[in-house]
Image (tube, rainbow, N blue to C red):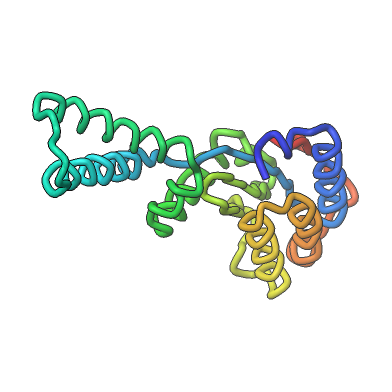
Length: 206
């Protein structure tokens, strides 16, 4: 699952219809946002580069074949850069070598910032709900504005969040779209839709 998958016309239309369906049950305003990455992981790239340089050093020291010592510094630099470039371009490797706690913290921070930066806190009742998908970290963070007391949402809410997380972890867009409507019932129970409710935020994927 990539950002481009979400931006395909058919996928965008599906998500928009789901958001409309959820908002038909509740006065909450649902927004779905997708980001390629939520943090900077250059330290992981440097780690892979350092391991490559260390491997080169061990070969130089212990391999029985003779090496040109004059070329050693340049070879070490080249190995470091190659390792760093490999990490930066191969997401599974970079993800595997990055702390899960750091990835989770970065997504939480980015989602909270996006809630404000995207104007979701400007609704009249402060009832914005952001479903923030970060693809590199394979995490989804659902952030609510102050008008939605997440602590009062029932068990169905937690089940819906777990279903969304499972879909993102598995890279399954269809499962994500299928899990998204499950947010409607608990939100509708907490914040029923009013007869004069107005759609204040765009329903398109951002």
